[in-house]
Length: 407
Image (cartoon, rainbow, N blue to C red; front, side, top):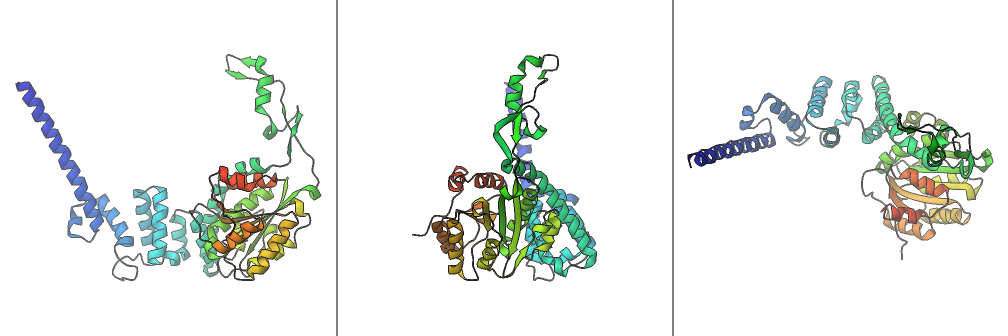
């Protein structure tokens, strides 16, 4: 019995210790919630006080309150703040906090500081901010901004390039075989099957003596599919512009397609000649302003030589500031000529986009598939479009909700 009592007593002490630890953690969390200026904050550890101060700088008061919630224009202070945030939170949370900082504290002004740009956690949204502010950036900041944009572009290219190239390389003719394929054209399933007798047990692998692959189809420039990415560069489409520019640069490097990039607001700018350098493309767009979709589609219409081989990917929220009726008539005419017109309400990961539902329904009724698309889905979308397969069926398979025609 004594042994049982001792055991029970030990369990009770353990429970008490756990309860105390739990209560201390709750107290700590409440002190962090109350902020660095609360009376309780003095009992926090040095690390927790740094965390509390970093959060108080952003969430401790309204941006208009001069006494609180200010990071000032001191670059060293901002760099320290960024360092604290990045130390305590993962990258995904850092980006959320930065976004809040831009909105609550007017930190777009801080983008003028090279030290800030060097310390910040860059993403697509930051690239859009830098592009929109480049005209007011001082020269000392411009080079740093280019480096930040280049880093994000390189990361996105690495993520998206291979899949895009593999998905839309229409120059491969899979109906013909060759025994001297390029590495990227090897049919590994057939090659392994034909070389099973050469299996090496000590190496646990097959050493092929004969390669089997797909023969590339020789195509003349005149026979190439023509892809026109026509991108709305109004402020609400900022991240779509970034992704579109990167995809256009990738597609321009694929011999199987002839890719053009056209951006527009109330003016039209053709960035096709700059596609070899995606950063230059991004610095060529003018984010913001009004929207004249009809004018942009008219420009693209003038670039079409072979309608049956042309795919017009119109990326816009369809808030038309120009002649809406003329726009619908023009798009309907292109579709009658067998131009493959696909309307993307957004090319981004930002969730459900805002768009003109009436115009979207009218476009769907005309015969242009209308839906939003994520960057990861775009390569397969283009492969489907280039093969002239049913894009709406593809969208349904991807669990993408397409816009239905207006009744």
